[in-house]
Amino acid sequence: MATLGPETIQMIQEALREEHIDGWLFYNFRGSNVFATRILNLPTHIMQTRRYFYYIPAQGTAQKLVHNIEQWNLDSLPGEKTLYVSWQSLREGVKKIVGGAKKVAMEYSPMSNIPYVSNVDGGTIELVRSQGLEVVSSANLVSRFEATWNDEQAEDNMVTAKHLRQIVDLTFGFIKQHILSNTPLHEYDVQQFMLSEFKKRSITTESDPNCSVNANSANPHYEPTKEIHSPLKKGDFVLLDLWAKTDKPHSVYGDITWTGFIGETVPEEYTKIFEIVKGGRDAALRYVQEAFKAGKEICGYQIDDAARNFFKDKGYDQYFVHRTGHSIGEEIHGNGANIDNLETRDERRIIPRTSFSIEPGIYLPGKFGVRSEIDVYISKNKEVIVPGQPLQDKVIAILA
Image 1: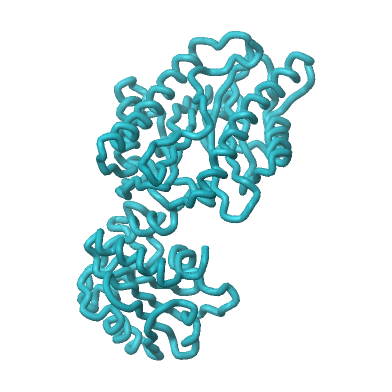
Image 2: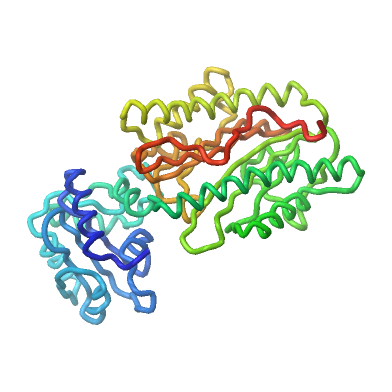
């Protein structure tokens, strides 16, 4: 991301006017606000030991409030500068830089509904409110300026999605080869095979992919290691979860989960649960597709409801113990809207040029867990795109 310039300032001001907010008040102290750090994108060599505020009004000139001994720290940003020294002058400075504003956005979430955005401490929120200001959440602004993809990122993602789908098929083939030849095979071996395919295809990951067998698949965050892993054998249920991005700066992730059974036919107990999971997945996807077709504005929590209500109707909602999906960006868990009305109530809007996963699951402790994960990208033209087709429509009979 380039240093914040006049063009981006103008885009932020347009967004503020659309949201009916007087300004966006960025605050940072020793890197405590990751969004201020990323969006303002200050030179990394600068020592930041004192609090600073940066205010972008819906109309007019941006304003800086910096400590006297670090008065040059925001010089890379447009705007007028105000200095403070004492805590009293800091408070006076806040009131000065916001001018006649009444409502400002900050990295805050009422009732901590969206904790991912809550980067400003409660005391600073109190300080700002003491100046007669209403503080509202910047959550939707963060999505617009931190979670959206450019055309190159979207194109790279489509390529990565194809690689991940191919790797799933190759990995099931790898398992089949070892089982039929009676060669010992463990979860860790399968994980390392997937990583070797990543390397061949010049895609990379911040953490290793996952192969979970039987009861391990009932742990949504199970990860095999070289020291801790289980063997694969005929009659086992297998879950593969893999995520990666192009090995280049600013590329974005793809993230999918598939399931299989090491046999020629899949037992009914696995098929039954998969059908419910697939139904929840498709209900969520259908909700998104129908909403955008109708021009309806939707939030992350509503998509979660679509999947969760399907599970409830089938009597399995108590086994669906995590959110339906997460934002996807340069990190596997991105900074846009999550598909969540369970762990949090994500009221952020789903907007063009953003991506998220849909990955409902049923986890039966001590037995097995089924998850089916797809990614969704909303194009700049509001098309609902699912990379990495075809989607899984049944548990794979690995030895068939």
